[in-house]
Length: 354
Image (cartoon, rainbow, N blue to C red):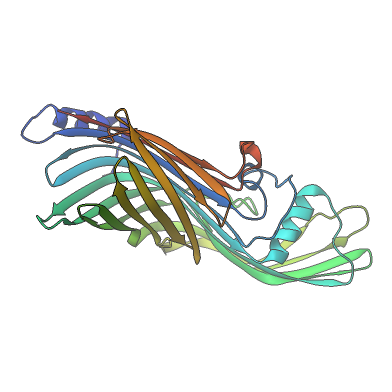
């Protein structure tokens, strides 16, 4: 029996629960999206890399959609999540960019190949518990019961050399997938089921407020009969007017069970209230990168207007919400021309009390 039979059915169930005053006091909807692409803009990173290349070793995106109800210390929500993480050597980014843009390799140079890719798309139910004390301390914990919808995970390592007008390379690969994006291995998509734990600690004082949240503090998705490709790749060809990879694979293909785990994502918030002004220092830590974002918000006429700046990616954040945060919107980008942005953020929240 499937864990989740569809978002529409779950949403109908949640709305029905909201009609029972003894259970539901709040209906909420949340959408969050965060994307970082170091070597090329986010749009080009998700496409053909046809944009100027700069230094970088990673690109990632985390996306969440929540539709749910909350009553007192308990909450229940339908969840969809989309996670994609790529880590690579600068040489690998350079080679892939040259392949996509039909540019020749640098002559008489050895390239170090490294790629670590993790992707998961899933849906499920998110059950939450929310506790607080009279001294201002609180703990929130959420357990997500997940059904996997898409799997991509693999690791590639090797070398490639360019000499005058020719190139040659060798690499090893260990690759799991629901759709083979490299060699077109046609097999049925696997079934995946699992769970994830998120935890949030927070404290509210007279003027100061602090919060620390760890998403995927523990996570595991178990894929049954997951296709795999494991072996070696040889590639050689000419490097005259342009460069194009022509990989030849030798190894084994098959299906087996696979346990997938995604990296932890940590974020923190700090607030200092002074009259109508609120001074803020927020941040996130992911894939060995710390993103600090100082900011300030002004409470005026029932609204809270926010501006912040994250220095690592040069991203400006602008936000607005009502004082009770029943409706809230925050946008972030490092470029006004969004198609050139290397860092993008979207947060949208709506809460309706009954």
